[in-house]
Image (tube, rainbow, N blue to C red; front, side, top):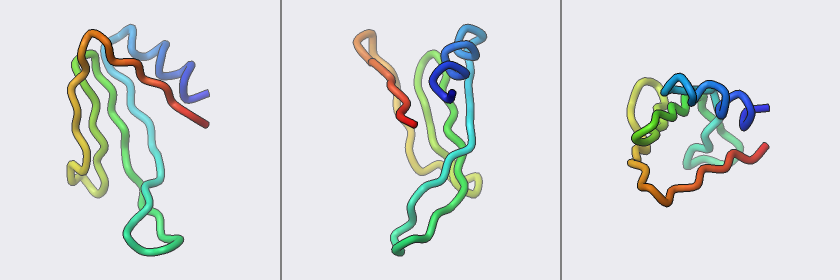
Length: 65
């Protein structure tokens, strides 16, 4: 479902979804937001940027369930 929603939304230039991110402690997860735009993507947890990346012409994004 995330893959198809993301593909549909990317036609407008932006997609985002809520995910869980593992912390450095066992079995502790924090809510985060993945944002994907035409030029790149980022993951924010508690409004802090934890991952950011830019896409290239050869970038292939796959979201796994």
